Structure formats: C-alpha cells, structure tokens
Amino acid sequence: MPQSVNLTFTEGAFVFLVPTALLLAPAALNSGNFAGFVTNFAFYAVFSAIISTALAKIMFAASGMMLASTALGRISEVMSAPVLKITDNPQVPKDNSVEFKDVSFTYAGAEIPALDHVSFKVEPGQTVALVGPSGGGKTTAASLIPRFWDVTSGSVLVGGVDVREADPHVLMDQVAFVFQNNRLFKTSILENVRASRPEASREEVQAALTAAQCDDILEKLPDGMDTVIGTEGTYLSGGEQQRVALARAILKDAPIVVLDEATAFADPENEAMIQKAFATLTKGRTVIMIAHRLSTVVGADKIIVLDGGKVSEEGTHTELVQANGLYARMWKEYNQAVKWRISQVDPTEAVSAKKEVQ
Ligand code: ADP
Ligand code: MG
Image 1: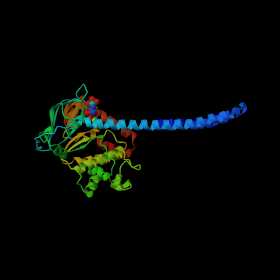
Image 2: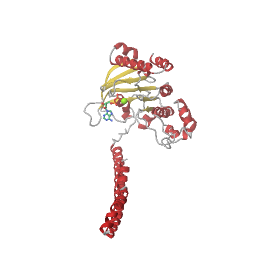
Image 3: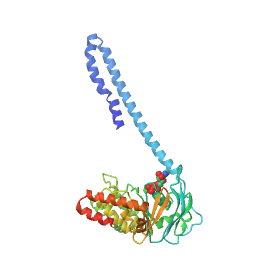
Image 4: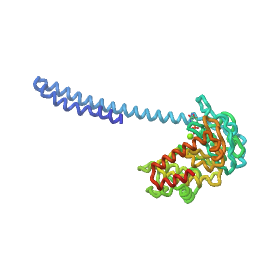
C-alpha cells in the first residue's frame, strides 16, 4: 500500500506538470517570452520523468533490501538454534511409557522457569491430560518430549530411557505429535500427510485421511488429495488444517501420541469431526493430551493440573472434582460456559452439547 502511494506521487508529477503549463502558457505568451517558457517546460518534463524513474528504482531496491534482510534474519535464527546433542551410545526405549522426573525448564532469557520440578508418569496405553490456566507450562512440557528443547534439570524418559540418551530417529518413530500450530506445507495434501511416513502408499494416505474425517475436504478440492494447498485460493480453515495434521499423525501409526489441542474451532461441526479423528488416533496408544475443552479429559486415566509451571493437582476427574481445588473450579467454569453456549444455539445442537458435558 505505501508503495502504491509513493508511486502515485512520483509518477503523478506529470499529471501536475501539464495543467500547470497550460495555466501558465497565456501569461508567458503575453510577456513575450514564450520560447523561454517552452524550454522551461521541456526541462521540467524530462527532469520529472528522470526523477520519478530514479525514485521508483530506489524504492524497489529498498523494498528488495528489506525482504533480503528479513530472509537473512530468519536464516541466522535457524542457524543459531542449538544443535541437538546426539548420544554416542543410544539406549533403546523398553516400552511405551512417558515419565517426567523432577523436570525444570527455563527458556533462554526468561527469569522464571516455565516448568518447576514437574514429575508424573504415563503408563503404556494410558491417557494422561495436562490441563491448567494459560501459561501454566502445558505446551512447554509437551515440547520437551520431542526435544524441541532439552530440560534445564531433571529428565524426560520415554520407555524408561532419557530422551537425550535415545537415538533421535528411534524417538521420532515412537512418538507422533500434533501441535496447536502444526503448519501444512505448500504442497499437495497427499505429500502433507505422507510427510510422517514417506514410504506410505496412496491408499494408506487415503485411509488415514478418511480416519481423520477429511473426506469432505477432499471432495470440495479440485484435484482431491493431489490439490496443492495455498495455491489458486485453496486455503483450508483452521479446523480443516487440524484434521489434515491428525491424518498425518494417524498415518505415522506411532505407539505414543502427544496432542496439543487447538483452543477453539469456529464451528461445532468441525469440532465434532476433530473429536472423532482424535478418538481414532488415540485408540490403543499412550496419549498425552493438552485439552482446553474439559469434556475431552473426563475419561482420562489421570489429569495433571499445571499451574505456574508446577503440578498443583493430580488425579482422575472424579477425584479432582471432589478435591474441590483448581480443577474443580475450572470444571465449574467450563460447565457454565457450555450452558451459556447452549442458551445461544439452536435446540438440536443443545442436545448434543449437553451430552458432551455429562
Ligand atoms: P501453556 O501451554 O500452559 O499455556 P506454555 O508452556 O506455553 O503454557 O508457557 C509457559 C510459560 O513459558 C509462560 O510463562 C510463557 O510465557 C513462557 N513461554 C512459552 N513459550 C516461550 C518461548 N518460546 N520463549 C520464552 N518463553 C516462553
Ligand atoms: Mg499451550
């Protein structure tokens, strides 16, 4: 936008030049110096053309420089990211459990730890939910499992092996992640899903997409799963992107799944489909889920309440409601919010929303 304004002003000099000349011409004729006037006009016409071209060149060069420096900034950010220390003597995880042992973690430059002596264990096949107020440390805890960062102290164990002592490839094969900000690549849906298991066949990708409730997305795209995302107006909504990301995790077929659920979806239909996709993905696996809708965690084997980087409560839904602490308060608030929503929606939806709470 600013560029177009600039261009209008510089290129527009001509627009002012001609009327001004026409205005001044009679005066020049009267004064008998018409030849001088014509020379002046010719000079300004050429001069303004040169100036405006030069200005436009400078402007484009400057915007090119800005793009280049942003790109360089990003490259140096990537290059300066700490390199994962890879162990010389990798241990093989023994089972599909996940354990946090006295884990503390402070982000570089932060004054207070994001996680402060956190311990909990997820047995193979169990579903454990991390809940708590925003900023409590849930996403940070989940990010330590794939070693987006390494702990400041304590240890994160997968199958009884410290993640720093495991072969990164083995670790990656064992754990599937669906993070809130999962981005899709600017390639076909097929390749986006296949990214988690490059040797998968087209049919396997299709099956994963179906399991992730993506069939309706494929139907409306011009080339089905071969449609390239982000081109010619083929953009997916947040909920649709989340489902494709779930298909990617389902295809991976890893025994441990870490889910950071998106905060909210625009429409209830999307939400219902995502819940179905979750159910497929988590069946028979070890699951660590960060859930914002507490209805999803009611059935969890264990709920860990993270508040200010510390485990403030731990137990099943029933135990925590009885304990009458932070979780019980969150549960009350959640139900109030759902009730409010029910009063805002049509009666058919209200029935299903009520079911969700019970
Ligand atoms: P939650 O997922 O429970 O909302 P987070 O794990 O995202 O909480 O955040 C925990 C704390 O760590 C917050 O105080 C947050 O501001 C901080 N934090 C999160 N991500 C970063 C980051 N990349 N750099 C610095 N601080 C961060
Ligand atoms: Mg979070």
